[in-house]
Image (cartoon, rainbow, N blue to C red; front, side, top):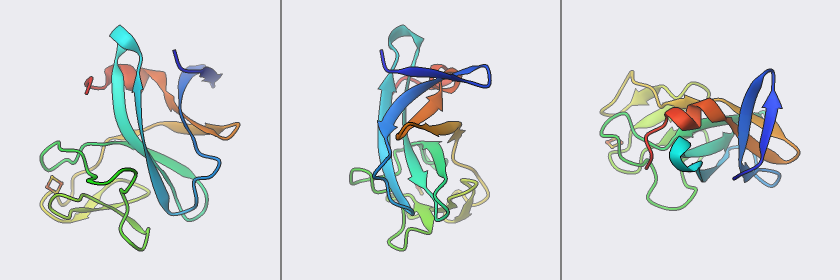
Length: 131
Ligand code: FES
């Protein structure tokens, strides 16, 4: 079982080390808590240094957004982009502003940064489809 921390009465699960994750870059994670659930997603560090997390599922077809490991952002690092049909999403909200799923949102996950690692709210992992 991965490491857990409690924050404001909620349990969070460690998903990956983010100490070296630069601003405007992204990294994938996958966690499996056995019978309780599993989740695949990615973490983005925005230009001000904050972390955001989303499930790795494009609202257009439900497919994973990335073709290459950890590559979820446009070349400029300003937007999230689906590699299949090119949909573009705002980093801060996950809203699609260009592409076949315009106006739809990526599923956001609650993330905190603690001691150099990213932690996702356990309840959200448990609700995720196990793939
Ligand atoms: S699957 Fe992402 S834009 Fe079509």
